[in-house]
Amino acid sequence: MKEIKPICYYKGWTKYGEELSGDRVKHCLTSNSLVLVLSDGLGSGVKANILSTLTTEIFLTMLEEGIQLPDVVETILKTLPICEERKISYSTFTIIQVFKDGRVKVVNFDNPDPVFIADSSLLKIPSEERIVHGKKLKLWEFRANRRMYIYTFSDGILYAGLGKLLNFGWGYENISDYLEKSTRKYDDLKYVVDNIMEVVYNYYGGQPGDDATLAGVHIREKKRVIIFTGPPLNLEEDEKVVKMFLSNEGEKIICGGTTSNIVSRYINKEVDMDLSTIKPDVPPFGKLEGVGLVTEGVLTLTKTSELLEKCNGDKNKLPSDKKNAAVILAKKLLDADECKFIVGQRINPVYQNPELPFSISIRKSIVEKLATTLQQYGKDVEIIKV
Amino acid sequence: MENLKKFNVEICVGTACHLMGSNALVNMVENLSEDIKKHLNIKCSLCFGNCNKEQIPPIVKVNGITYTSVTPEKLKEIILSCLEGIK
Ligand code: FES
Image (cartoon, rainbow over the protein chains, first blue to last red):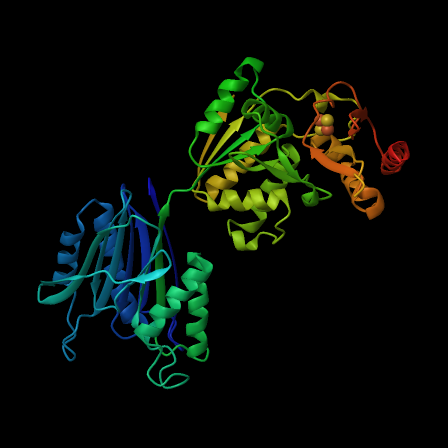
């Protein structure tokens, strides 16, 4: 993997009858990594909540300041109070730190062991044990060189169904297997976590007997898309811009008839349109060698922009129509971490054709609107005007 | 086996042509009887580059000849007369 992009997602249930959860998950981005902390305060309710909140906050604040993980762990373990009666610490924690260069560090103190899944199979990664201030920690350190999922959860997940649907609760092995299967099937972090939390809820019969939290980190290559839309202002620039477009990393998309003709002429290949994808409000789409998606320009971009605004950044809320250029484009943009637009400024004379009863919006302003929405959803967006 | 004679029907589905009704043209062509359709090479383009020459969209090319401001009825007529020609 060239450049890593970790993403995380988590969800939790609060113990039935309690207002506050004793589990706490939070994440942050440091200058070179993503850090996720899951902490489970002893017991439940307010006291547990305060303890786990404190633990996560100290972790994240110190790591954000650039303090190294071992030092932070030391500080925490030194300060964590011990329960007088049970002689156990008031709060457990798991930290997952994924660096941009692919290094991964995981530290676990008293939570169930994290589950590692790579290439859709469970992965046993040897851990190292370390005693710090009399407390036993487990550490994993490795380099992620392929797509990977790391899940961490509180013991409320482990005991889901205990004494109700399942005699001894769901159990670590069963959960690992289930995580492996759903990850293989859906390959979508949010989907897997939501799905498993649904199962947990049902095992508890809708009344969780403990705070239960699941958090996941998905490590994958940074996804880039590059969209070429509109012919360059200067005719002489055509070839230069096409070369720049084709040499860019990431998935290539063309939005525009004239634009697709320019690229098609340059590479001497025909655009292969799929006529069955025509819609009353969106023209059809096709393919071109080396280009994953070719669509019409302003109408499709306008529709895509609308869809993106409506779905609130959640691709599961997009219409399911697989034969609609705007839906496909919206999905590709939501899947990407980085979206680059090459926007040609040549005025299309057809827009001045007096026979047209419609006013067609200017390409530039549609792309700018689209870019703003994508930025709101956390994408890196770049617009290159040519 | 008799060699089936075919001719090209290219419909532009670019911005201007789509706005001016190429969707209806595509639907009309797709709903033609199989007997007619088997003689057609249906293709579409994202812009013939003609719409800026003061030609009125939607634009269709049948057998290489450009037709402008085409309606479904007009296109059907064109196709039927081409069909006559090859029979
Ligand atoms: S959009 Fe049809 S010829 Fe240009």
